[in-house]
Image (cartoon, rainbow, N blue to C red):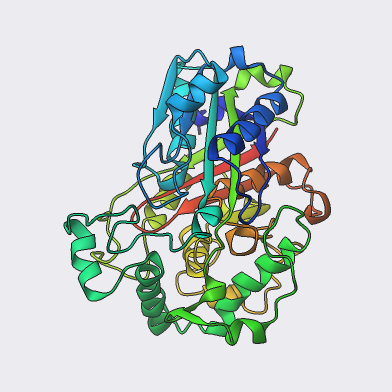
Length: 398
């Protein structure tokens, strides 16, 4: 297979701000902390950054969700940009990552800074946060599109929207709650070794099964935990690799296809989501196969989304995820597919997929500390989203 565009691009820098619950720090402060650290990690100066991207861009509610917009960050860092991008559309949370890769490959920019910031935990301190009948930002929104079909029937939250997919999957393929629990239990075991993780205390199967039900069959421990923090990357042209001070991590493939309807419930198969198209697209752009992946960081905004990604990416057959994750041995750090090694979003904190990509980079660099997988990982995959929109990236260490 000839070289793909993304294979001319590398991750030159990666960093995070302080991560925590209710830090009560400003979103711009956290963003600049992560961005400046990522630029330093890449061995660059601010003057060398000529591209900027973020997700989702500055927007109204829900509170704490969007972080500062790119104009604010550009001005704060005094960046001179040849290319910039912000907005929620595209391959879910990884849209700015994939777009930045394309921009660098096309020569629009040489070093693109990409960041994602959330302060949802602090925003929730004063009361409810999230999307509901008021749209999360006050006032009454237009009830059109899918929201107009869901909200009048009480489906106010993504927990509801994901739950009916999970319920249908359980009916079709006999996934048990004891099996599904392994996603949460595995995340907590890994989070115990991550000093930045939100929840690090031991978690048992009994704890999981007795947890408060949120939207059947999803309980509280199937839902990610709101957090405050920022994650930033510098994405650079591959010819910069010889000057990098970090191990060279290149993009092997990206996947962002969307062939089915961009819908939570108007789909031909309710046991799959947009991850299926994105995964198929990713594997079409590389000669590597699922069995070549050494570590996987798969979106766990809700535990069932991780199950869906495991099947979509071909780590197990359709309907076979329950058997694959049963007992947790195969997805443990010393298993055949170490999964969400930093604690994911279920225990590490909801950084909206960017924390998963950061963990993938650390694992490939050999910089994950106590949670480092021991098989000298050379290939990692990170996936985000999975409802109506999804995106995935495959990384390889040179």
